[in-house]
Image 1 (tube, helix red, strand yellow):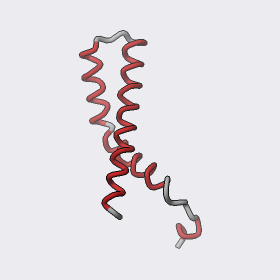
Image 2: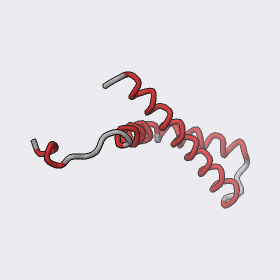
Image 3: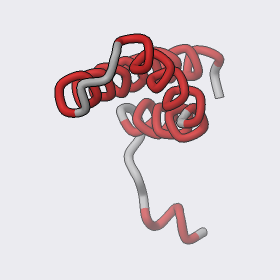
Image 4: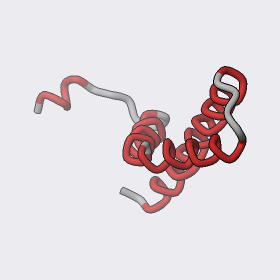
Length: 76
């Protein structure tokens, strides 16, 4: 793998993290009426605990933008 692959994956990971943070804020602020400080701690906890999933997902999204899946190569 090229080092630039991981740089691109990092940008995708940033986008996923921002989307998670915004979704968490909107849900907790408008539906559960939590304070902003509690929301901040909840967002940090979700981002830290979800980091392995976000990193793997961002690498998969980034590589699928450039490569296609070939079932014949997967069998061999």
